[in-house]
Image 1 (spheres, rainbow, N blue to C red):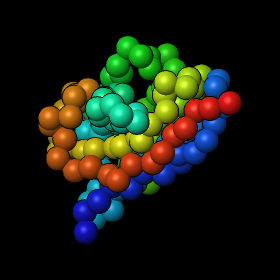
Image 2: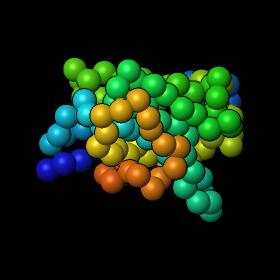
Image 3: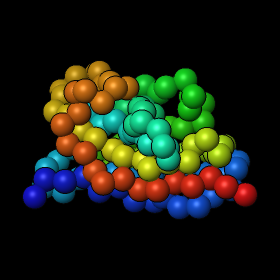
Image 4: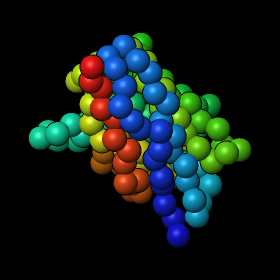
Length: 126
């Protein structure tokens, strides 16, 4: 069964950090670009960032640049999203998604992504 599973979410105070994981099963991530997305309560899903399959090039949306970082460990079939300097507005359900790619590119929009995880909740509150 092909699936992506997110983990690592939780409750954290403003200014804190979390590391989310996105682990693939049923396929290897080597030739897949991975995107991270989030959905806040009452709002639509928005992109956070992405990482390419070749050379692990990353892209981020402006609201998280310099605070969030994405990395991948193909040996563990896992992609990570490091969240630092968290703000209350970062609260939401965080998803990872994949699409087959053998390039330096990735997308900070949902359209190209074909396989989605179920999400992990991040709550930033004092």
